[in-house]
Length: 203
Image 1 (cartoon, rainbow, N blue to C red):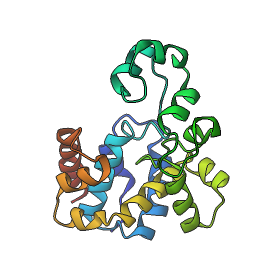
Image 2: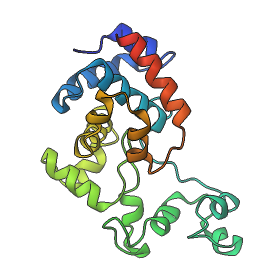
Image 3: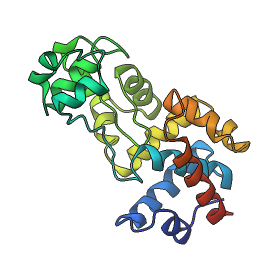
Image 4: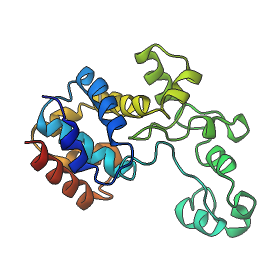
């Protein structure tokens, strides 16, 4: 099946670019077998939660020093450590994502270069490299592509495919999906609500 524009308008109410999102979704979803009401509703629900209802295509790391101590305590154990990073997203990303997920150290700049992008935010050089290889693009091209509507969708579809999330969608297992996407169950109630609403509209 294919999602109709009228259906998407009922799911993404008040979204200013719903027509553009619809065109991009119709282009990309079938390539990844996201093609049943349950699969489409699951995808829209999870992506909707992760991206603030399809409004955020890049990770926002504009944290105050006070918030850094709370959110990233492992990397900013004291306010003294956090103060130089206050409201400096590039510096924050380079510290938080340094020396993991295929990234180099803090000075390499990889943390910011490969920060979270797309509807289900791919993060880290390893993930970018694998996704880039799957679509035949360079790392630089892939970073830019993920900030477009099609790229934001396709990066999420790629993540969906390699983690076999259609398997969970087919049994309406939103909790199982959330564990894979989130690593826990943050926002589970919102994800469930979005899924039930989307499925009712699509079916």
